Amino acid sequence: MDLTKSRVALCRPILDTWNTYEETTDAIVPDTFPDIARVAAVYGNPQLKDDAPQSGRVLISGSIHATVLYVPEGGGAPRKLDIPISFAHIEEAAGIDADSRLFVSCRVVSATAHVMNSRKLSVTAALSLSCRVFAADTVALTDGFSDDSDDLQLLTTTHTITVPSSVHRHEFTLMEDVSLPEGTKYNAVFAPRAEMRLSDCRILNGKAVLKGDIALHLLAQTNEETLENTDFVIPFTQIFEAEGIEENQTVNVCFSIRHLDAELRDDGLVGIGLGACALLTAFQTHTLQLIDDVYHLVHPVHAETQPVTLPACHPLAELGCEAAETIPVGMKIAQISDVSAALDALIQDGGQPSLRMMVCILYRADDGEYYSVQRAVSLPLSIPDATQHVRLNGMQCRASATITGEDAISLSLNGRCSLLCDEPLQLNDLSALQIDSDTPAPASPVSIIVRYVDAEERLWDIAKSCRTTVDAIRQANQLSDDCTAAKAQMLLIPVQ
Image 1 (cartoon, helix red, strand yellow):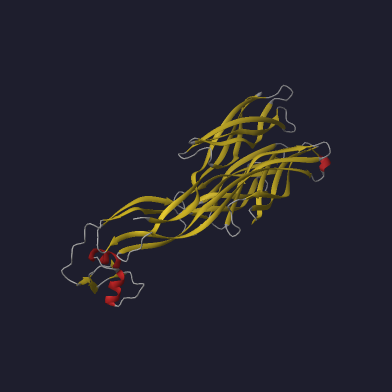
Image 2: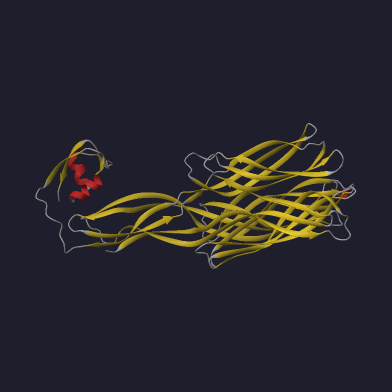
């Protein structure tokens, strides 16, 4: 018998990982630089070069531009060393090929430097890599038969699912000049960090219009050789092709910064170059009426099924999170020069889920020397009770610090977090049905069966065992049309 199918077009997630690992390199202090007394702080700026899906794997490579601030022997203003650290990482998963759709995000979670001797350093950066791979797919599910027969009885269930229906990746570059406040007081900028924030996404005539801004953070050195943090907000608008996305669909947008450069020019302006990638994921909701069971009133049937999993998921509403901590440093603090924070991991260990952030605070002590302190801080998340499994989709975080008393720092973190809720639908799909028309069902010696139903039992199971219909049982017992089960009652069961 020919089956009819409902078809669901989707982008199936093949891989969604978030891994942190370390890269280390040794560096020699240039001859023109003074000897190292101690390291004050280390910053890392990732530069993603290549990410390409291959047969069964993804190769990710690039470099980390590490900036080491150190105090020279004999004291004085901190000196800056720029040290490149190359990295290459491989993620493997069955089903990845050259046509897979890939989105990679990388950030430096923390960076440290160990003084091996006065002219040599060992620099380590912890790099967090997020890798998502999708494959276009179409799932066909049996919902009926081409030849209707009153003798063929079907048990159907309605499923409402939301799946990622379309994925688009777009790379773009932004170039901008910004002015430092009191620009003439600075002689260098370094350690650029940026966060891309979406304010509006619209689908119009097959195109996606994205509007937002870039929160840019720089560390600047003054002519008096002190260090200060400077912040800028740069608005942006980007228009991309979005074939296959309808205007009424839910669209989720994620950004990845592939490279970021900042240079203070002679004219006092800071030239910003940013390469970014945007991932647009459209979600479609489907209502499916699928066959759970089947039997024939006259002949035996032979049914074959196959297991099918639909990767149903949907984005949750953004969640706010915050945390605060007081950090004693054991010395008088004159100035907090910089605060940076980076996401380390989403923690789900059976308790309340939380985001772990790595925070680095650069401060100047009362003696004029610079020091830094790093902390891992947890930000608890309040996820709806019915949510079973979530994946981190994006995070925006703002970190600030103030001096508490004379020798402590009050740290405050505020963030917005977006999550994806996974609700995969697993079912057995009817793949083939054969009616044995040469073998009639055994004739029943009676036309009606009187049966007492003790424990709750489905009307479907009763009708199937007696080769009658659910409607016939309802009519014989004056049951409502929405009645599906019987319990502790006598039933009249008409036999076909």
